[in-house]
Length: 485
Image (cartoon, rainbow, N blue to C red):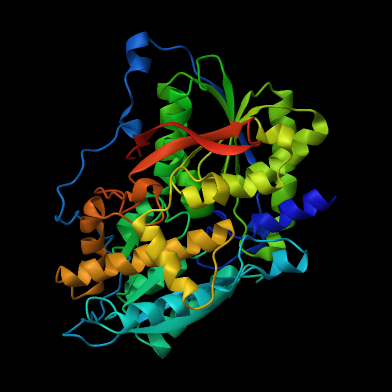
């Protein structure tokens, strides 16, 4: 019973939880959760060896962009309203927006969400240290904090209030660091106010979202399309997706995952001649929607088990619920996921966890702090040292992840200012332009990369899986380029 409650809480805590809003922008409780799911099943006929051996366009890595050039940003005509762009002049102070995250629903259930101190104390420490050394390219940082809580029953309303604080009560030039949801309304609000968003959260929308919001650039993760193509690319390289293997996919509308599935994932599956069964569900819009999501994932487990699915693909929170249900049924499939293995390792049944194959790019959350792939880099040491000066000691996976995301965002923004960016749209473009030559603290090997369809994100990924010697998840094998949608 405790595991069920734990799984319920984690679905709304942070790891990849996002919100899909109807086009009317009115949150509907009837759409909430992952229920009712839509089941799609298809067995693809075997194709010729020539057709299946060649990588489809969706899985190929685009040619690296020349460092220092700005990627083209296409903006939907109706997505960004005309507004005066706030310019950064001389060495004026810069207001920076930081979204703080409380996990009240997890805390009320006695669940450790992987943090040792509050977000605001961490942001405040970093701001103090950056200002002590000249701020951002000589501009002192004036922090503006917007508070959010996963325990809120309506995340969209909560983030609208945050955006109003950033853009109406204040005039922030950029929003930097981790946020626990991707909300089209929040991105639209920032874009309409011409505020750069250096997005440090897990899912910065799909490729369509990134076209629509020209001030959005990722400093941590690929698009929803890119994330799932990475998992499929890794699993194919690992030999887990051989012909004849039936795969079950847990897809939701989070960060427009359903759209990414139709455009990028399903064509990949067909091109590789795989049999698959897909359950598509609606994303939670607040903490009260979580129970229906848990029920839907449990129902998916029964469907997959009865139809002979051998490999299950899904995000970390969904897989945790799925593993709990599979454990009670004696079902032992192989599991595929992207980032977030550390949270699964701390909570999933060990016998299920042994079948996990992750393909991640965030060491801080892929494996536990004791099994990082290498010694801390100079960028990581510098980031953590600033916190220590203010009495904050990073100990748990979210401590490292949120700190590194903030430091990378601040450092990238400083480089964009140094390159001459004076408006938020130029900031987003310049941040994307310098990512290929930037070494950060958060992503694997500190690498980032932007393309014309993916405004920033990690440059490489690596498989992590269960290691018997330590009874833990560790990275294994070489790194590979993140596929471009």
